[in-house]
Image (cartoon, rainbow, N blue to C red; front, side):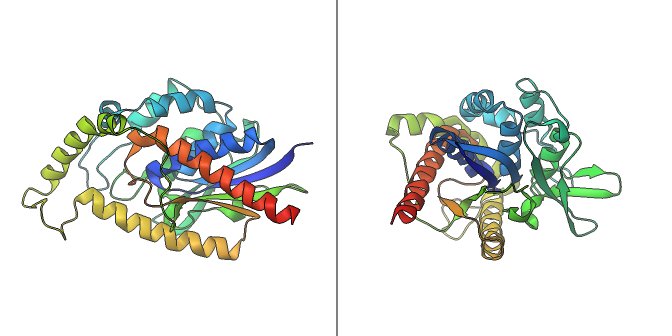
Length: 295
């Protein structure tokens, strides 16, 4: 009989692609995911899994090379954010159709933050696209989602590892995945040629945008942080601290850790590598857990 798992996936931008590898490894080892909750990228990957469309999503996100990633960035330069985020979800609609959360194959919850009313919002019903769009809305980067009298932004602002919101069942194993862990980076074997090909044009175009935002900045200055680098470091530190508090308060049976230094928040072109990083982290953590059980 398969061991039931209630799975919680943290936010972390592009590092959240590692969740795919974690899920694949859990299934490979015979675990049955019976419910799932996530924040930001964790909400996205968790939602795709609950829809039963993980293979299609994995193929799509791993195909996002430097050019495709940049084309998915719909810049607005509005006062509420730089990116609409509509292009990403519209691209996903070509792979998976919108569904009401209550009709999914397993219980699912996505976390967002109501910035006007200063409270956490948990999506357990209604459009899964709306839930994901709200949960991934990184402040100052993605424009917020307005729903009635609320203005919704990234759930990581309040609860980056939503352990208390995953639906539990008798005898299940509570597993959390933290992609903002303060641990050394694990790197799978990728050739230098592959790494260079992945980064080249994407880096050039993103650098061009950085220069637009900070025309007076000198890249050679050691203490200079670009707009996106500043957001990245700020979010990483914030999510790390919030995640630690959540883990201490709602201790999971197993915590799978992925280094916060695996990539930056916006390095979505590294999805294939991150999937393998997640797979390795899950295999390592499961082996350590089983070793303790058998001692």
